[in-house]
Image (cartoon, rainbow, N blue to C red; front, side):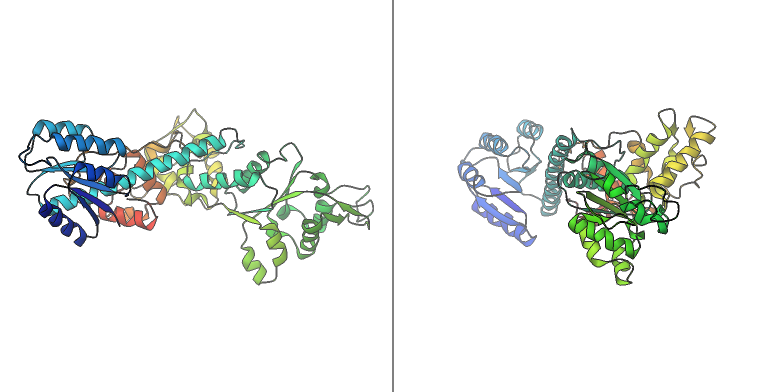
Amino acid sequence: MDTILIVDDNHAICQALGLMLEINGYQVLTCHTPEDALSLMATQDVDLVIQDMNFTRDTTSGEEGRQLFYALRERQQDLPIILMTAWTQLETAVELVKAGAADYMGKPWDDAKLLNSITNLIALHKLARANQQLERVNSQRQVAIADADLCGIVFGSGAMQRCIDLALQLARSDVSVLITGPNGAGKDKLADIIHANSPLKNKPFIKVNVGALPMELLEAELFGAEAGAFTGANKARIGRFEAADGGTLFLDEIGNLPLSGQVKLLRVLQTGEFERLGSHKTLKVKVRVISATNADLAQDIAEGRFREDLFYRLNVIELALPPLNQRIDDILPLVKHFVGEGFSLSKPAQQALLQHRWPGNVRELENACKRAALLAQSRVLTEADFGLPPAQGGHSSAISTTTFGRNLTEVTPIEPQVKSLHHDGPAQSDSSDAMDVSREQIEMALRQHKGVIARVAKSLGLSRQALYRRMDKFGLEK
């Protein structure tokens, strides 16, 4: 519940204001002198202050209110303050509004106007605080990744940022990691980042695509084979576990490992011991295992295709990578990376790229970019160059022109707005295209328009009420 402090020497005004605000769901604190207000602010969290400008009988200069305003500002710089007086001094009002007063109202006040102003100011204050927190978090992230090796990964979405943050955190440990996600989404890149930032970064990093190995050679590839162990084995060979001893082994498409191989893999993970194919000599290694799969291993376990005990050995920590169509802010930075600096994108091409579902994920996008660069008739790429149909609607264009080529790890602070917000224009009706607005689009629009809800809603083709509903749905602060 939001808390509002009322500072007025007139007890009747405090009671009237307090009753109205409590009826509308606010917690109310009241006091009657500037000194009491400052003492109360030292012990209570307050979301907004409504203060009188004169506290001494027969005084109308507003100087007492002016001093209180600056004292409150000194204690909490971004606190919304509504100034209220029956003796409106234009010069004082202009000065204090310039200094950060959120609104200036005369007595008697208009209830509807005052409530509207309070609602907007508190919402904006919360959004500004959330943005400041986001800026601090982003600053901490920048410090954390300043010396990190990101292995050339290109991204712009919050979802990918969170995956990379977790990958860097996991890199410092030696636990087994299971990376899940669809084919072509970039699971191998996350494995690269984990190894490159781990204490084992100077040790061997061996990759093996389990799904690409012939069934009859899979055990020999993983665990090695003695000469004569099978037809064509003319000499002994070491397996991938031996090659990775002391380092990291990345097992891609682990869901395709047959049950016989799963038994041996489980033993290696538990004890570090195994035998080469055709040998009874036990070998011991120390290997960190990172695995990846696009399969639903829980379903495979239920159907008897994957061992549950192996699953829990591999899945000490799961790193879930979303598909590209859930990371739309990654699309245009990736396109710029794949086509190179010699090309630019037409606006319809940007919209078509953002609206395509990308079932093949980053791999499909890379192939489309190679096609476009080869077949392009000019340096401005169109949707036809990518083999895409024209975009339907236009809701993606709100972010397209700002995403392409921008440093998307940068966070733009939201400036607190100090003027009254109760004169917003008429609400817009939702369009059918706006129903698919994503969390990333809303976050980017909030940054682009500095948290001004009316502008954000207009850029996304939403009414303010619809925007608030979506912000609630995604857990974004208003």
